[in-house]
Image (cartoon, rainbow, N blue to C red):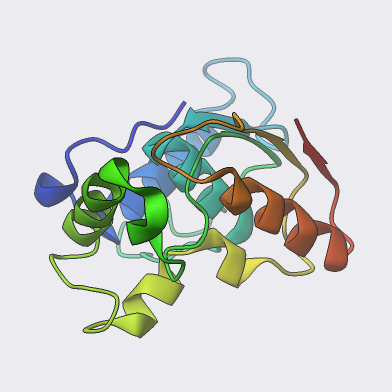
Length: 170
């Protein structure tokens, strides 16, 4: 399971790098722990949902660790529970929770606003990376989520299906 942690202390993309290193570490040590390195899934909720969605849509970003460099960080399936998937969307429309959501995203993205760093907001959005290597997704999202709009899940599910990837939205 991925946990987003305190974004100001571990902003994008360092939080993704940590998760990718963890997946690669598991692959390196799979024999020791009697695991199948070809069958590693990821599950996470909210900020963790965002990070596991990145693990299923993005390739390894940081190859600086020689021990891990030859191992993939991409998981084989994802369970995303209420994770934000498109930071280019306008979260300010969420009423009272909107300002909190906007601030959390800004904290995650190095203190920059969407207007200041549109490329960073796009890069951190799993929906921007859906492609032919994207793994199967199971997406759970509450219709009355006050912080992450359910539209985030619906749009990710639609993008996955459009790309011919397996997706189930509940």
